[in-house]
Length: 142
Image 1 (cartoon, helix red, strand yellow):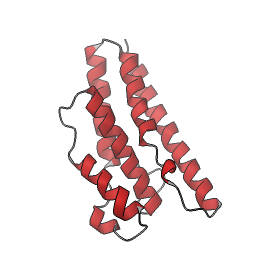
Image 2: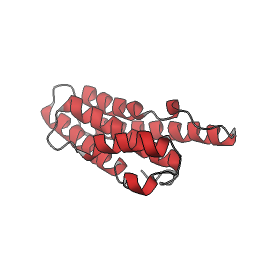
Image 3: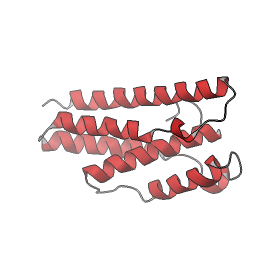
Image 4: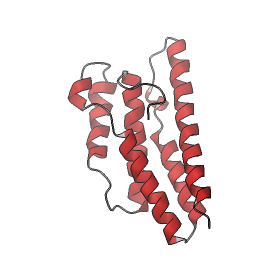
């Protein structure tokens, strides 16, 4: 299998999932409604990694590239302010969910298997989305 298929499909899928998040956030803000917790869907991003792994099938080199890509994307999502820097900005997002996700993501995923990498990617995407809701990262800065 060509690595180009799963690699480009992963990036396109992540972009679509994050664009969908931005659409949900924009709709909530335009309606002047407080965003609810259903707004954050890190699992949609994790599903992108799962699709890439499925596309690789049993090709070990393809799976290794896909895993590396998932870990790298999760590290990118995790480049958000420390929980202390966002505390009090928008509870319960900033004081409840954000530190929980931070704790989960800060452990990293070096050498983890496929299922753990998918969980890590989903948690990291959710952390970035919560950071966006709290207002400490800019749209499309993931």
